[in-house]
Length: 261
Image 1 (cartoon, rainbow, N blue to C red):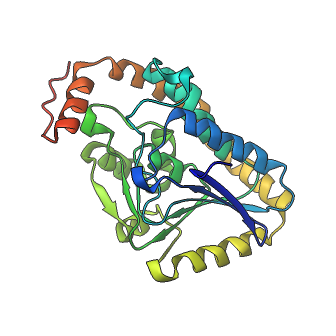
Image 2: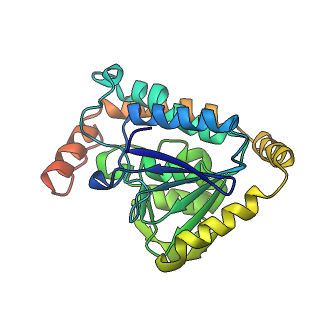
């Protein structure tokens, strides 16, 4: 395992760490394929009964990395292909993992990083956790399953508010909105996360798997449907002038001027 994606098993808990602090743990489609492989392997890992997904201290995941992907497959790929054949593969692997998956959020979780937090079963935060649906800033819609997952956690009105305003909310607001199951200070965060995860890992794995499957199947739609719809619409938006303007404005550190084109 390379140093930018770390794994460790402690007390029957598999820790998966996105370890790229120099880019605030921003990810590419190619990186997400590697993350998917880790979760595929976790399914058959008898020594691990629960999984904690986290980032290098101070950040969970700052979203998608805008620099070229090291994976040649995505070098000239469209936005829709990058989503379907890159990002979605990891999100589905996490969603379909039969073991409890816990996001340990010690810093910003925005964009696709927010989706990585949402797709986990539970979310634990330090007091420097942050969350943001920032896609509107570059003329795109929420993706990564956000339109499927976020309303189920915070309700339709708050989900649309977060998506339409694009605000970054703090840890206390995340807890109030239902995005966090627990909130602790930075000083005690790692220890508390471990204790929490160990308690989960001590439960019945077969029952956990069935509980998770039943909860997913009893939802009124499917993640696959939501992901496909998002990718289709995101592909359309990715060809828009507003998207080009949004990216240009972001790179030039100026307000974007969207024209609905």
